[in-house]
Image 1 (cartoon, chains in turn cyan, red):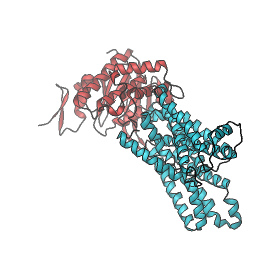
Image 2: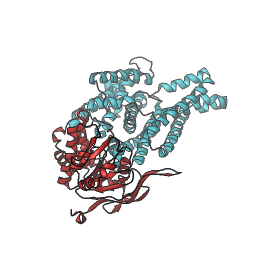
Image 3: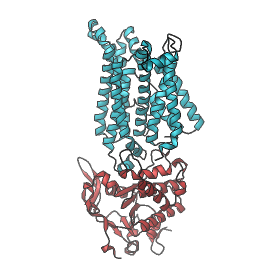
Image 4: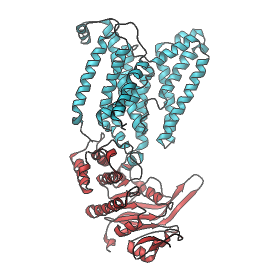
Amino acid sequence: MSDIKTYRLSFIVLIALLIVCFFTNISLGSVSISFGEIVNSLFGFSDNYIVQNYRLPKAITAILVGSGLGVSGLLMQTLFRNPLAGPFVLGISSGASLGVAIVILGAGFFGGAFTALLVSKWSIVIAASLGSFLVLLAVLVVSTKVRDTMAILIIGLMFGSITAAVVSVLSYFSSAEQLQQYIFWGFGSLGNLSWNELLIFSIIYGFGLLLSIISIKALNTLLLGENYAKSLGLNIKQNRLIIIVATSLLAGTITAFAGPIAFIGLAIPHIVRQIFTTSNHKILLPAILLLGAIVMLVCDSIAQLPTSDYTLPINAITSLFGAPVVIWLLIRKRKMMF
Amino acid sequence: MTNQNQHIILKTNNLAIGYKSKKSHTVIASGININLFAGELVGLVGANGIGKSTLLRTLTQVQDPLDGTILLNDKKLTEIQPLELAKNLSLVLTEQIVSKNLTVFELVALGRQPYTNWIGKLSKQDIEVVERSLKQTSIIELKHRKCFELSDGQLQKVMITRALAQDTDVIILDEPTTHLDMYHKAYILKLLQKLVKETGKTILFSSHEIDLAIQLCDKMIVMTKNNVISEMPCNLIQKGTFNELFPKDLITFDEKTGSFKIKK
C-alpha cells in the first residue's frame, strides 16, 4: 500500500486548515470577542463564559460530527460497494427520527401533564438513540441471516420507508406546535451540548472510531470484492458486523445529539478520494477525519451568520455549501473514483 | 512419468458435487477422483453447464461437497481454517474487482493480506515477494499504473500476479481467458505454464480453449455427462474422450490437429 509519507504535505495542509478553522469558528458569533481574549480563555488564563461554555463545546461538537459522519460514510460506501451509500443507508437516521417523532408528536397522546416532562433535551437524545438502536438491531438480525450485502442495503432502505410512513401518520394527528418542534429537530443543531453531554458523546464516538480503525485492513481487502476477500482468509460476517456496529455508534450518537445532518457523510469520502486519488483506507480514514471536521467547522461558521443574532439550520448549510463543491470536483476531474 | 514419487497437493476421494436444499440434493457430478501433483498445469474443460464452476467452487471451499472428501496437502479441506487456507490456495475469479482506483502494486500487495499484521502493514519480505511476482509475470513496468488504465489482458495478468504474491501451493483460475483476444488467450496460458515450471506451484484453470489446453497442460480434467476423467492430454486424445464433450451434430474432434472442426 502506498506510503503515508507520499501524502505528508496534504496532511500538513489539512491539519493547518483545521487549526485555522477551529479558531475562526470560535472567534465568530453574535457577540464579538477579541482574538487575544479567546486564546487566553482557551488556555485557561481568563474566564470567558461565552467561549468556555458555548463556543468551545460547539466547535468540538462540530469536529466530532463532521469527522464521525465522514468516517461512517466511508465505511458504508466500501462495505456496500456503492458510491451513493452514506451513514444513514442502514436506516439509522430514520430510526432516530421515529424515536424523536414518537416523543414530540406522540406527546399529545400521553396527555398534557407528561408533555413537559417528555419533551426535554435528554428525552429527545434518548429517544433518538433508542430509535436508531432498534432499527439497527433489526438490520443486524437480518444481516446475520442474509448472505448478500446488497440485500442488507435494500432492507435498510425498507426500514427507512416504514419509519418515514409512521412519522407521517404521527404528523397527521399532531398540532402545529408539535410539528414545528419536530421540524426544528430535523434542522440539526450543534450548539446545545453541555460539557456533560459532550463527554458521553465523545466516549461513544471514541468506541466507534476505534472499531473503524480496526476495520482498515478488512476494508482494503473488500476493495477486491467479497469472494476475493474470502479467499484471502477474511471472515466476512464478523468484519461486516464490526463495520456496521462502528457506523451505528458514530452515526447513531451524532444523530441523537446533533440531529440528522445530511450530506457530510456522503460527500466527504468523495471529496477526499478526489484530492488524494487513492482507495487505500489507511490514507482515506485520517484524511476524512480531518476534512470532515474542517467542513463542519466552516458550515457552522456560516450558519451562525457572523455579527448577527440568527443561526441558520446547519442541515441546510451543509448541503448548500457542500453539494456544489462535489459537483465542481466531479466536473473538473470528469471521473468518479471509487 | 514419475508422478507416483511426487507429492500430491490436491486430492479428491469419490467427490460428489451439486447443490443442497432442505428438501433435496441436486447432484451435478459424482465419483470424482482427481490427484493434482506439485508443479502441474491442469486444465479443466467441459461443455457449458456441465459443472466446471461448481467443481471449482467446491474445491475452493466456497460450497460444501455433497459427498466424498477433498484433501489439500493431506489435510481435509473442511478442517482447514480460512486464514490457513488462504496461505495454501489462491484464486483468480471471473468477477470484476470493486475498486479499480488501486495501483497495480497496491492490488498485487493485497495478495499479502494473510501474512500482514492487523492494519495490513507490508514487511520488507512482503514487498520483496510482490516485486518478485511482478517480475515473474513481466508487468513490473505497470507497477504505478492505476487499474482503470489497464486493458483486459493487462488486468488479467495483474490478477494472476496477485494470486502469485499470495504464495500458495495451489492457484485456481476460473476461465482466465474469457474476454481476451486469441493472442492474449495463448499468452495467459503460456504464462501459466511458465509459472508452473519456475515456481513448482500447481495451477488449475477452467477454460473453453480446448486446443490451447491440449498443447500446454500437463494434465486435463474433462467433464462429460457421464464421468469426470483426469489424464494427460495425449492419452485423452487416444481414448477419444474429447469426442464425448459436446453433442455430435455440429463439431467433431480432429485427433491429428488436436482441435475441433465444424462438420461440413
